[in-house]
Length: 171
Image 1 (cartoon, helix red, strand yellow):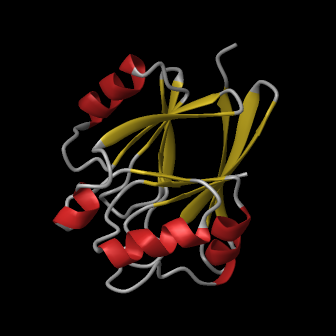
Image 2 (spheres, rainbow, N blue to C red):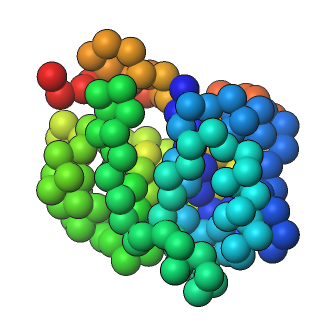
């Protein structure tokens, strides 16, 4: 399973609780789309996750920025994921990033608004924020990859699923 989070904005830790804490602990891969805020928050995620792939966001301190890239491409069981925070991207540049990476899925954060949409043959996922939702519902995502597709769901930290989606993998 892949767990996808973003926009933690933590001063002293990962700010995980409830179902999202269980999902991060159980995941084979955790993707974080930036805005840990402090190095303590990043380190807490590194301790909790079996495998963490992350990028920095616009509010991350220098110590976090020096440890993470602005963008990265991650592969997991045939699923190719382009990961960026999104603060330096428009919809068009995120689409171009996904195409250039030959990605099946682009993961981004920044807006704190959870959602999934398809643009052509690429899926775009913003998991929202599990800890600092602002005026949106709190959220994160879980993905199960199998065969020629991935099944995803957007979930509140309480465990309530509020959206589901499917990503077809390029063969």
